Length: 277
Image 1 (cartoon, helix red, strand yellow):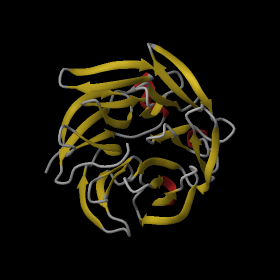
Image 2 (cartoon, one colour):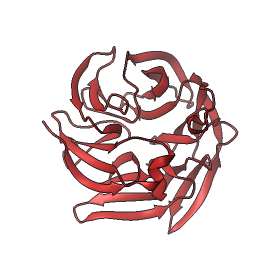
Image 3 (cartoon, helix red, strand yellow):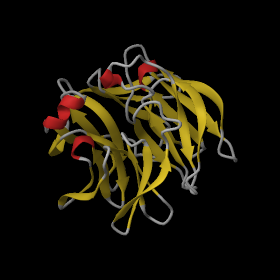
Image 4 (cartoon, helix red, strand yellow):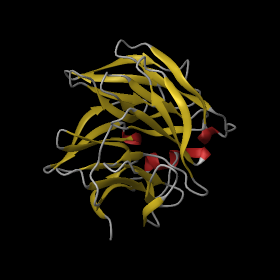
């Protein structure tokens, strides 16, 4: 099986989401959120400070992370406004996010500025409620990144530099309990992730230049080599949720703001997507 390129010429695509019959995603260095449909790609909003994770409020407005401003933003009626300042919690740039059915946003961050040579350190996952209040809900995470929520109420986050997926039970009051390892890898650095109907997780692995499918406990059932391109995020979409959209690039880091090597590529899979996002 081979990947099909559906859009190229991007700086650094991330945070793909299937919503309203289109693939929505952030393009870091052009500071745009775009939506890709049958008629092509449309710029939805420009977000200062580099957009990343995406989600939607119950009223249909777009929620988006500004990485460098370390903020959760809302785009509604053509206007961009700040929902929550996360700088008190995020010790590095903010990154991916999942928004649940109660309009709570679960936001990760780097924990350190890897591009400025700061030492690696753990950080927290932040929950932002619908009223804009924010709190840390899980500590000691090493580069919390892509996040999914299962239909049963389990939150799973990719700890990129710990090379693992970590699962929590979501309680009625919005806290996280019963922390455990969903999958531990030897040489996979999980970035963006998405869930399918069998409970498996598709993982984008930029260092391994692959996407792979893994079950609870660590059993890998499928992997697709994307060499020489790295995979940074993935999302199951399409009318039947069986198209795996993958954000790929030839590398990462600030140098890529001057390049347009980013692509959205696709692969057809057997099991449809499920859960959130």
